[in-house]
Image (cartoon, rainbow, N blue to C red):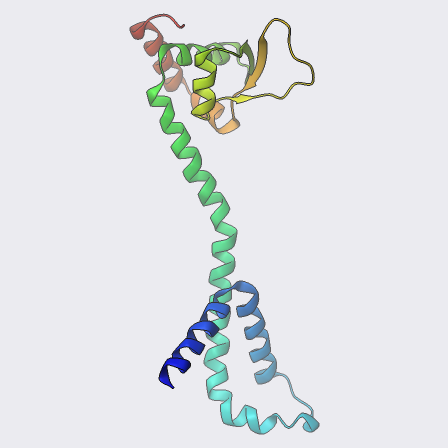
Length: 177
């Protein structure tokens, strides 16, 4: 018998943690506690007998609902921030060809550049998520394709310190491929 009760309590808790269920339980408990109920429902005695249990349930489900909504709203920006931070770490591992391509874009002050699409440099930058291929309707017969640097990467590399770092990589490690 105690195992059945604990299993039931765990199932109820799992449901109450979801925002829609905790909100529903909160609204129902507020309705039961605060709204004057008609006599034909005969819930006045229930409210008097179990109101001291319903009050804490109301508060707990309200706070559960608030926490769940805050976590739901904040999870996307946090996930984006961590993803961007991980991608920007890739800048430290650039080879001279990759640094040259990004330096070329910075010098032109152009976030979208055309570059030969079948080189290892471009493929490497795409795999590091520092460059994205722009979809085109017609293939280019000269084998040059447009590529764009994502906005958060562009904002980071457009800083003078990062540009200087690219120039140093280019000078110390040699010419691009």
